[in-house]
Image 1: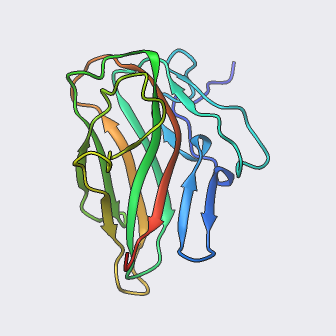
Image 2 (image 1 turned 135 degrees about the horizontal axis):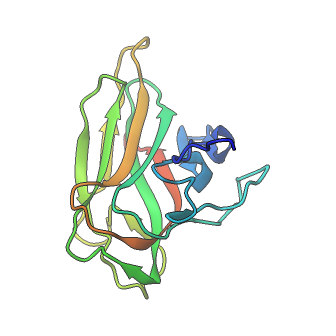
Length: 184
């Protein structure tokens, strides 16, 4: 019997690059690397599609104690980018109340992580929402690429909750967005 890997590796065709206007990305669920994502006890992945441009099916967290959902994209030198996730909590979501999740990012393999706390303990009647929540008193999560042309401008970012050890579930992730906001 062939052993499958427990973690879901990002599929490049689920990362949609917008080059018209500002250089930005929309990362659909299958474009994310998900720890324990290949294990059906923990995650429900959306079906494979040939074109993810109009896909709106989320990846759904059934239950995990270790939340690590990441992505990697290339940035243009000397630009500022805003990072966010479009998510929703299912009516039966659990484990989010007293824990702190983090949105973390770094530029380059040797870069230093910057992070912000994100609130996921929303009312499940809210429907889809953006993290970080910029409608409340939250601020957008931004990171700058390096100015040098030959620098490693690969953005490594993700959503994490790996410290509490508590089980959590019911999180639906529709997409992650990396938007060039230079000069905005």
